[in-house]
Length: 140
Image (tube, rainbow, N blue to C red):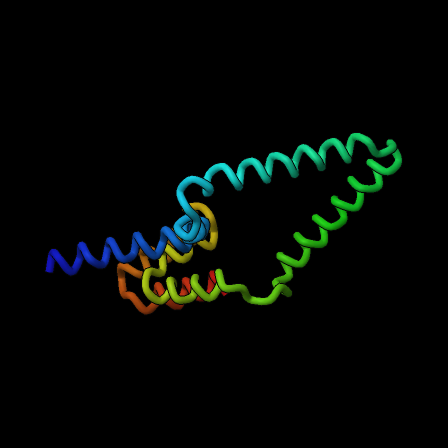
């Protein structure tokens, strides 16, 4: 009984590691020498190039770019709130996790421990099926 519990805890931790931080899977594909230096130097160089390009623009062009970025951000938030975006792989994984561990799925979806998490935890502890149903309602 104890060994089965330990196995399930380690399996759950391994699955969560790849769900929460998918960059771990990419790290194992690269050689140890290039994984840390390649990403940081490329991103730092591209950021510096973007900053110098932005500083070289005229004042009017800067205002236009900032206004365009704000407009795109508003559209993204509106689309996210309306739920019109296609279901992603993350949502599919959350549904699978909601069946296995409902409170954890609610926590990962919400991003914080809040009332929805505690309600789902109580429902799961009382009886597993209501916890699953509530987790699916929250996620979908």
